[in-house]
Amino acid sequence: MRSDFLLTIAGRLNRDPGKLLLLAVILAVCSGCVTQPTSGPVAEAQSDLKEAREARSDPRIAAADYLEAADVAMLSINKSTGEAAPEIRQTYNSACQELAVLLRDHNELWDREEVFHSHHHVYRLHFAGPSRQAETWDPAYLDFFRTPRQSRLRTANETPKSGWGGVLVGVHKPADTRKYFLPRTGLALPVTAVVDIAQPDARKTGALDATFSLYDPGAREKIRLGGVQEPLAADLAAPSGYYPNPFFAGLAAMMRPANYQEQGGLYILEPYDPDQIPVVFIHGLLSVPQMWRPTIDAINADAELRGRFQFWVFSYPTGNPISLSALRLRESLTSIYQLYPRTRSMILIGHSMGGLLAQMQAVCSERVLWDGVFRNHADGLYTTLPPDSLVKKALIFDPTPHVNRIVFICVPHRGSNLATGWIGSLGVGLIRLPRAIISRAELVVLGPILKNIGMKAIPSGINSLSPRSPLLRPLDTLPITVPYHSIIGDRGRGDSPNSSDGVVAYWSSHLDGAQSELIVPGPHGSYALPQTIAELKRILRLDLEARNESGSKRIAGESRSARKSGTPALAN
Image (tube, rainbow, N blue to C red; front, side):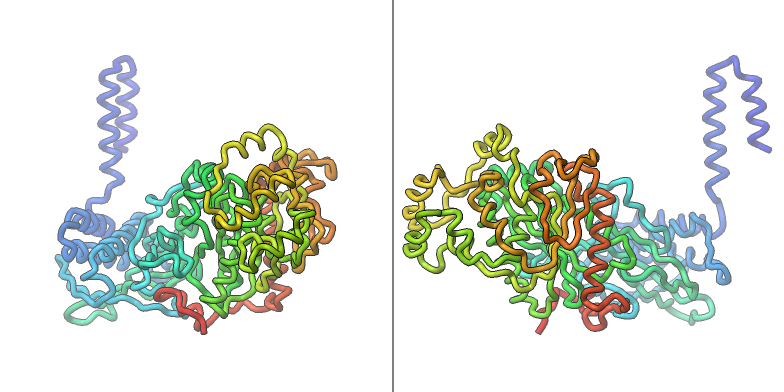
């Protein structure tokens, strides 16, 4: 009735702009008064939340106010339907989220039983430990929190799941991250913080019991809150946004590989679990591991695949020779099984140049590459250089025994003409290989031979992509020892086998022995196309079936519990 009256007045004042502006202000104020509750549980919970935020300089007072806000919100849940006003759930979630950040920021309050005094109640708060059944993280495993808003690179297709609980990104960052193959900035994980407080029929005189749980929302969808089954809030894509994504890092790593040697290597994106199947993503020229973020998030969004696979990425400066980068990958894969002997055989997914690195993990080179590169000088150089020579290790090797399957995406198995054109020449001219890429003694022996076979210097990553590359030609003759699949772009023209993705022609990407080949309507960067992601999911399901796991949806018992707690344990 009030709104109708004001609108009638507005109609009578339509010739006076000044009065209309004043009326608009009045309408806005009245509208705010109508929507903001002045009493009842919503207003009480929001008032407690506001007081908690104002009292954050005193963490004990703030924690008590957060608990009371959550308590009031929980009491408003309808026991028969599980429903509550949207404002109540929002207030509860904010209280849980901000309480988690507050407590984690104060070590003296974290992961221990504490008593907090609010205006109306006394709360005895204790932390739920890691649990296989409950799917909760170990509080000691999480070193700090970030909110989803603090995550970078949010995209439109990342839709958080509504429900109950404070959504967070938990970060595990031990002192020596690289010892456990963790990202240098720490391992980011999806966390939903939930406070469950004793309900009226369970309350006793004295302190109210409050249980603080840190759920893994990727492992469960519902929780029991106040005796009622409720959906668990989740934002599974938020952890990916935690990691930095420097825009020009791929270009810089190609041009100045020496500056990025220490940043290279394998990185695990989840707590280690020996029962999950490792999937290693390998980026291509001018790229960085962050390029795989949409692909990994899309796979993780599949409930059938989530929890069955463990995602890793391999980072390397793409200006280095391909054979050297492949050696570093080989050494990294070997070191995984030295640290974690129970790790299952893995799947490699490589884009562009990364596919060549993957291919070189599944061939027996003998002296085929060596002879192809050094030609008439191969025998003499082989005799001269010692067995542990870097050049020998890069060109003479056996298949990596733990690779089970490979997926090639837009891979130039036979090179790319762009590497020999002006673009390739410009790129080669910009690259400055590390001076210490091989030992001085090896360089003294190798230098004259390179000149005799027409090479001015050690070939860079771009040099190695030429269709005339002395590395790719012999590599193309070696049989791949594991099942493999090809995904090839054609820019949507549908003219295969005469097609190209704009960088790599079909004749270069096609492999006769592939178990499957899918041509997708996209450019060279087709790794994130919906068709590509759908094909990757199909291949992952195929791999599960091949391992005789298709009929089982088991969640590993001891390992799932282990991955919720502590620094990843060594598997004996």
